[in-house]
Length: 366
Length: 248
Image (cartoon, rainbow over all chains, first blue to last red; front, side, top):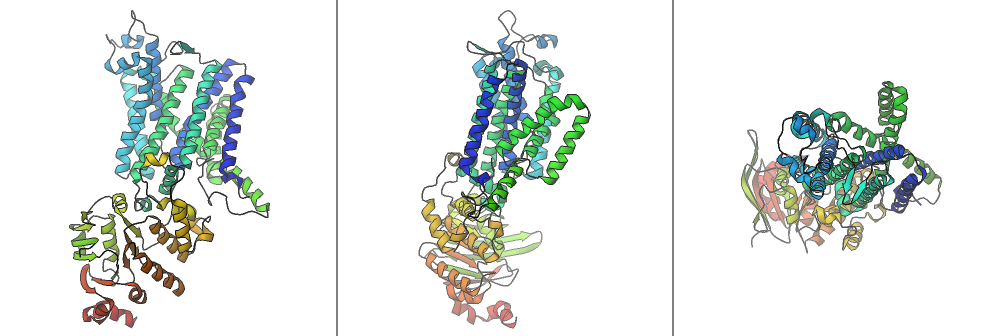
């Protein structure tokens, strides 16, 4: 029967069970504060998923996933901020404090909710396409690309911090009301907000899973293995890398929008290096080759941080760091590889076992 | 008859060292051309120059009358040139079958491939190539665990999956047994019906078996060109290459 871990049908079944379990959460949880917190974990799951696609699957380590997340979050916050402005009061208060007399050009499109949402997602995606395109064409790869993303993240962080009149500086943006979509108001503490995040997380996960199983996914996997060889097969390595980096950025941008919808707040902290590094840690601990493992990694680490972090305070970082070292040392492919190993033991006991049903070591996603 | 591949006055220098020096040759469609010469003659560098891995200092490469000099590797591959490397380069972390599937590169557009889950014509081609390469029973294995001979076969298989018009084979039978080499010779001769081959090989027995034309390189330049009989009778070739082999 082979290792069940690599069986595509089994993988999809696990996904369905996973999302069914997440789907019943709002029915079980009546505490609206807790539900909101669970929804933010969903956002972190989406971020871990985006990194799993880019890093685990595409082999492109991205230390600046906060760029796409942060730009998406700022776009959403600007949209929500403008929703609370009226004819008599057309300018956000922090701009008045910075002695701006009219709404800057940068902000004007966000007066329209539709346009604002489109920009919040399109701008970071376009950034990834352009930045990735330039880098990958120049064959910047591996640690060099990781360093470039880090540098770019710091640049964005500095600009946002510095342009106080346009971005709210270190205070960030705190839209006073919840997000209005048409006539519908999405209260961040309501099940509706949870469902929105749930829907995007599920959509993004299934989409990513399909990508990994497509011909595109096969080529991407080959590029991770030996990019130089793949060029001589006729594939544009830079093209594939740009596409996967951009899709990953798109998912992170959507996550940024969802996050602001839930917390009604964004600040440069979302573009801080430490936040982007924690995305890497979630994926690494959960298992970057596994989409579901990465999502669970985010749930576990952020969940533990919320509850144990309060108990241990400063020691929490030491515990997290220690845990990270143990995982990297003993389980380089994260907690998901434990599941793989467990199924592997099961397989060996099975006397009728044959090599994996769908091609040796197939797409290491799940 | 003009050649499918034409190399005109190609030169390549690394710093002050001239590795390829005013080298010209052509490969006629539907033939097997063997490129031979002592170590360091510039055979693999010539392959690198044809496939775009390195750019020439001067000179031109034409493929099917198109100038492909200094084009990107993937564009040259798409134009119809497949290459097997001297040190077999397969995707070691993927299965044998996945290696062959990736090499089946009729569709190279990333956006189109996002929506492709089954490749038309893949199964037949895969069966054909796997049988030819003797890898039918090994399809599920990870390519990294194959023996050296099998790895050579797999990479030859990958080049065949590409369905190129011109196949560049850099030392295809290194590490193969005599039987395997004979089989390779047969496959190459069969391929001549649909494709053109440029083969770099040291084994003169193999060259004698397959070559329509032999090109001898020495110090980055053309030393001699002709049929195997002409080459073996050539005094200059005996001096710099074949004599050396007989002595060894």
